[in-house]
Length: 162
Image (tube, rainbow, N blue to C red; front, side, top):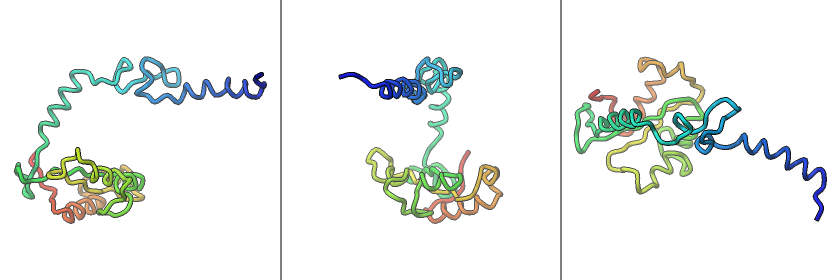
C-alpha cells in the first residue's frame, strides 16, 4: 500500500504535537517548551529529595485527630477542607455544599474508597463559586463564615492545637 502525501504530512505534523503533550512526570530529563525540566522534582525525577521527604513526614506526623475544643483525642476528627472558587467546589463535591456530593467528585470517590480512613477523616467543602484567591486571604473575610458553617454542619469546629 502506498501512503498518500496528506497522510504523510499529517504524521509529520502530529509527531511534534504529540511530543509536546507528554505529562511533566513522564518527561524525565526532557524539556517542556524547550526550557523547563520535566519531572515533579529537580533533575527530572519523580522522587522527592531527602530534605523534602523529611519535612513532609515531619509535618504529617503532626496531623492527629482533635476534639471540638482542639485537643488531641483518639475519638477526635481530622478535617480536610477545600477552599477556592467554583471549579474547586465542582471538583471537590459537585452537588451539595455541604454534602451529599456527586459520586464522581473527589469527596464522592473518597467516600467510596475503602483505603480512606472513614473513622477520623472528615472532608468539608468550603469552596464557593465566584470567589477568587483574594477572598480567602484571611479567616476574618466573609468566605470563611461559610467554611465555619460547613464545619459546624459536619459536627466539627475550627479549634486546633497548632
